[in-house]
Image (cartoon, rainbow, N blue to C red; front, side):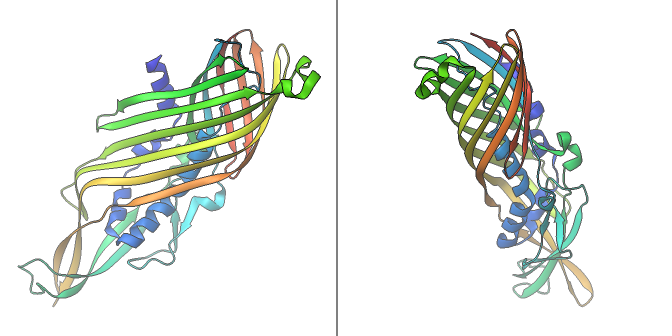
Length: 352
């Protein structure tokens, strides 16, 4: 089961695309303020989409299991980023010039060529400008987006979970992937989510004798992803022991209802979701900047700062979906209207 959970999460999660993206460390060449703006502008649509996606897919019926009944669900959630969020503005940057906009992570694959300019005190003792203030520059190439590599052009999120019936018409739902290594560069993934569903159909009197079921759901998810950035000894940026980490936490509360018939189940819900994510990088990063004195080019190597950027997403959502029941085997699909509209689909093996 551990292997199934791991493969499913990796296959349908955002982490493989984050890991596949190369070159975003070049953003470290910009000064601290511009670096954080560029990191936020480039990654925020993807992280917001992932938060909306991971808050989806927690249910495919409002009816809870009998005591110790359970189901295993393997699904896919994909959130579509609005077209206007596929690019971000480069206006207002102090140390970076060369373009007015660039693709975000969820945009097209076009790279953007920029120039970073800084004024620094020269520390190279072999330079005739040693100890003096000079304007130095370096090329900065922003990576293109990954839209063409995303499944259905949507930001994917894992939706693998186990639900178990508890007393008092309640149900516990768990998403769990233990800290697991992937790839050959020190990548690690750790995911934990827990939800509680309480059926309240009986609160409405004789309604509990009909196919209609009503429940309340609350769920929380935390995920950590980290992977190594390969060492670089040449070029504009020098990297040693680089590591990028994305930490995410999210929660959702929803009121859900379903009409449960022997073969077809119609379900839907209305709720609120919120989530936060953080990007940080560790390791040693240096940038090679050029300047000219009397027609001769010199290089100044600067220690580079690392980002600590926060992302957030929140909003109300409305979900409609249907499930086909073939005995204990279920096939389901739903669509959620929210800031980043989300499709959820998958299969479940349900008992009692």
